[in-house]
Amino acid sequence: MFIFANLLGAIAQVLDYILWAYLWILIGRVVVSFFNADEQNPIVRFLYAATEPVLAPLRRRLPCFGDFDFSPIVAWLAVIFLKRFLVGSLYELARRLS
Image (tube, rainbow, N blue to C red):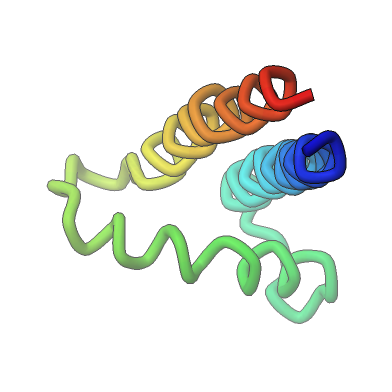
């Protein structure tokens, strides 16, 4: 049973790192959007490619308030929720199984 607990703990930790990195990618996307960066830059292309699949559906569902885009804020809150709920639950389950 401890092997399954270790597996769950490892999955939780990897998922935590992935979500943490995605938070920074979202922050980078917001910063780049403020400065009107060159879209041919590979870093800018990466930020847009990594975040647009999440932000585009949110943008379609959220109301528009002028030029302000709320989709990164909603995505950021969703990632924080996943980190707290899903990763926390996996860690707790792994701890109880060990």
